[in-house]
Length: 182
Ligand code: FEO
Image (cartoon, rainbow, N blue to C red; front, side):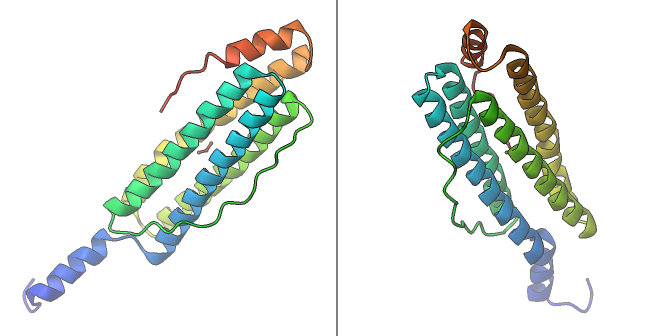
């Protein structure tokens, strides 16, 4: 680059490698959303355990761990791109639910909101021609499809069998077999 000294060239290189302020802020918001999700699912796990849905309590605990790993993916990405993770307050999640069906309905509702947030983040990355962030977010877009699908299946099964009786115990046992995925 003729006409530019080394300091200017180094600064330009850093600037192109770094995320925009708007992108950083949006990713920080998403870290908060993922950690808030984790907190919500841990609260649901506590409710399930307290109401003798041991398998569902385990399912929610795995979900809690997954949400933390989602937050950490974003946290690491910010660091890798020369950004800065800034942690925000997490709101108190609900502690009481009407039934197991109510729990899973709230999971689906919550995941649909998360999907919308991820899509808004992606739209910002497109607007900013931030290709690296677009690639990183593609994993989250695929993950959201899976999360909504899995939760919808549990809701459909709970609607079929009702919230009480032997069938729900079988479903609860099945949910308890969920392994840690990522
Ligand atoms: Fe990380 Fe369930 O969205």
